[in-house]
Amino acid sequence: MRWPLDQHVVTQGWHYNSGASHNGIDLRTQIGNTSVRPVYAAAEGDVCAVQLWDGHTRDERSMQSYGNRVDIRHADYKKQSLVSRYAHLFKYIVAKGQHVREGQLIGYSGATGNVYGAHLHFEVLLGGKRTNPLVWLDDDFTTASDNVYTYGPGEHAVERPAAAGVSTSTTTNGLQIITAKGLTNQQAWTVYMLATQLQLVTMRLYSADFADADCTHQNIEVGPVSKGDAKQIMDKLAAVGATGTAEAA
Ligand SMILES: [Zn+2]
Image (cartoon, rainbow, N blue to C red; front, side, top):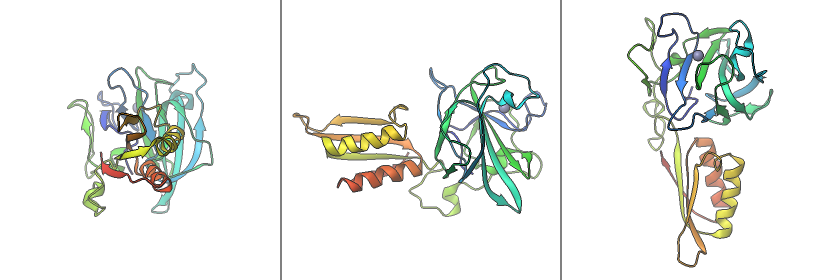
């Protein structure tokens, strides 16, 4: 699976720092003055459940303690169902039954449900049983402190995508930055509209500058974005007759 956030800082592991069982991992979302960050599908699959938080329940025995939540069912693993779960979301933008590709934006991190502060709670359920999510992810992460639990005996990370023989133009997180120079305003506008649809403008992942003194052409930069979003942007550039460059973020 791929990391569901752009930044990979584990604040609480499979066991809480206190030693109590946690059954998932917590990922830091607070950076600077915002904790609302894009959350991406860890793998391709179908959204099998969404839960809208009722706004008040924090009881740990209730599913409502997850807050706004998305569950995605992936292809079975060794004949067992495989589900990833994303909790405490600020909001989700997918619906039950929707097919999502790996790296697709599914929502934004938040602080709903039973939380003391904003973070993304991430779980992986195999055959309906929660498993240590770090076993499904690569080792491209840091821990918020030395106390954070990482792997049990015999557990380890999956290979990073680059080491698994994927093109070297993709980095460990697979994110890309796209630049295109000298677009006409009309070409730039078309890309801007797509970036708006993909929520990249809201996330401030789209920027543009005029390329000339009379403001007829623009240089744009989009990213860092997932490979799926990057492909859509590149396809759009090609469709309007412009050339873009995608580079690993
Ligand atoms: Zn948690």
